[in-house]
Length: 336
Image (cartoon, rainbow, N blue to C red; front, side):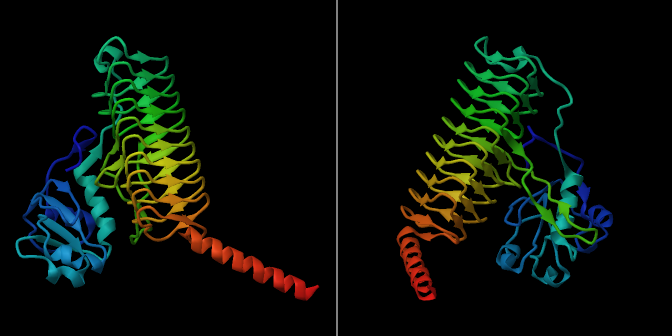
């Protein structure tokens, strides 16, 4: 269930009414009532899930969801007792169902500093807007023109720079957020449909643990369903993109313009050089190092240093670079 501090739960719906609005077919269980969306692995009988790829067939066959949206050819694999909606655009229809059952809380009313602050040591500069349910720990300073959305929780002794926007997020103690940072915006997700690509609602949060620093104009997207997490002690430079569902370990270091695609997991003490780019759904092991400008397309084992595009172990990259340089030199000598 999405966090109710950030998302409204709308009225429950029958499977039949959802399918009718989607223009999809009910295979069975039209009378089942659902009140939330969830991943296919959910154990929630009140939730609706989807399967968009055959590789998740084992998960489908063991799902405990109340309803699933699947391609017509997959309907026979849904366990007994689970309602089924057949659709040739399962993910797009699940996205539409999400909007029928959940809605993000808007900044409809600003609250006063005494309503949000733990005590008088909290400093709020001119132009700051605080949404309903915001809580700010003692010793924290919020700089000018920052907007803090409904439900956001900020720990003690934090420093939040000017023109920052914080939404759908929880911040620990002693967090530093520099000017222009965007935390909690919707992650990039789209699904194909008959009408063209549709946005997939992002129903997760961002968790920023203690002693994290995030540099100017960086972006950390909230999770699609689970949370995006920045581990304690991690230091993030300027102009960095961390996409939805990334889980960053403790004491990670990221130089400027690093880009992490969705659902990346890193161990503790990982270092990223400037402008490194990491493909989605990869695991970067504890103590690994990624050289500046590297393009990582595979998991990196713990403790290794990778470089190049596509990135590979540093020694291999250097050997290949030296060999290529020698070949180019030989060819140049022959031509002259």
